[in-house]
Image (cartoon, rainbow, N blue to C red):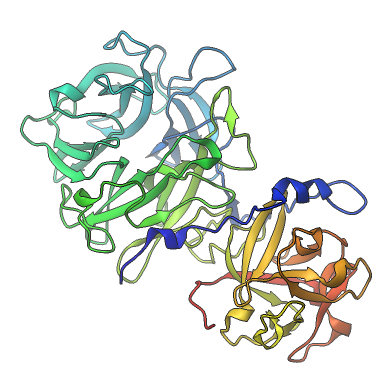
Length: 516
């Protein structure tokens, strides 16, 4: 099977009137509501850390704690930077600020270079923090340095450069990843001029001449090598990282039986032959809420599950903070398909909510939903929301029916902003709405082509028991069954909220490959 990274991308439906128009309408009677996260302890929510700009995360486990580090960024609205911020967590989900790794800048450059893309490791009885020392927009001899400390909270003492780009006749020697194979230390690095690897000296402070290897083509960066399933997996980012909400960054992957390659992707393509942006197989790409996911690290938890921590933008957060791009930290558990390839998030996009344990559906949430294709089931009847008779006609009725596997029972959930969602039928491409924009008890629910009216927008309000109520933005009433009926073909209409099971709904993610 040939994989296409575009299959993970979600179609942007913020057209014509745009998200702001619906958000401005709000709820009848004024005010706003938010579908709050559940507090049962079974889930966590992305972003996992948004208290400060936190791009290019790297993580190490120390006893029962995890420590994460990020690139320098401006702070306090002043002409200064945080020198590698540090946060810590007991569970990878709730993070607390610790401080900065450096007390002063390394002195082996005399220009205005910054400390980027740190890479934390425990090696030789110390904490090794490799870093990129570079200037934005310049390829003038960046290099990778090393600082060490006796504790993960530092302060770290600079040990100088491991190498500069001109020593290896490379361009953009940044974004390092340190790893050890059979007792020998190695490093991979690279940013848009190829990804390369090299053997290091036993103390990890210098490189071994003549050991450089080419691992991946141009327009790739932020390499991370992870050993699992009898392979080495090379994760990397591609696309544009730093265009705010318009960023096209995504994470792709290849694997090899050998740490220094050659690496091939899911299509069997040698990564060295990929040179265009976003031309590999994406395992995480942006959605309407979280654009630009990338620059990942990886860590194992208590159950030996691997987690990917990475940065992205969040449209519910400011696009810029203190004049810099507001990239914040997300986390998703790595799952594996039957062929041993990593699967991330909700069908290849960041999750808004995720089970803390390895059980559960990453796409079935009790908080705000990621865009995707879902079944919507009524709690009282157990049947699915569908368009009657698989009709594609304007105004066709919506009802409940047992699962048939047909696309008329699948709904593409589209995030309209401000906790508003549109439900687009996968068979007809029409939207779920209240007929005639009715605001009365008993108004019928049907499908209709998209027209931008708030009667086609719904709030998903969490009920506290793992279910939702579907509240129409125009009427303030919720989706219910007709007169308490629970037979096949039961009609669906709107009623005032009473808490009855007929007004409670569950959602579960499905693949897009359904009968049509």
